[in-house]
Length: 159
Image (tube, rainbow, N blue to C red):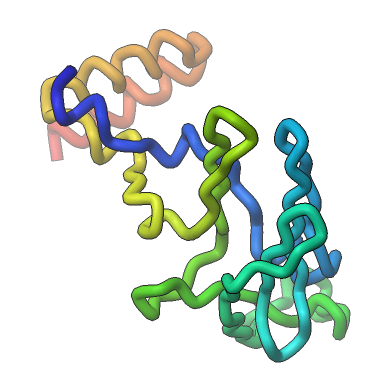
């Protein structure tokens, strides 16, 4: 097995949106016999409970007000939805998602993309592999979408 195959992909992880977790207050899942709960505890951030036992893992929350031109929404954002929430990772960066990796034997790992060392699939492919993947995507497109894409690439070649 080559080193390239050992890299964990983001698509293999279960995505947990921080925004939904904050608005709902908690996120609960069961893997085997293990109950995993992420709970928003106000200014302290997000804490992890495993089988109702508090773990020494916490993530801080960063909140940002939604600003800018909101005319396309009718000029109104409800007060309780006027914030965008991020999670502060161990490296100090902001993340919109936590990721869960289920392991055999009711074990799991939870953290940000960087904590898992996961990469997006498109950045794992070589230049030649990316061309093959693009051709596969074209096969899945409808005939109308393919013709539109061909017209766009043809006009780009002549300009």
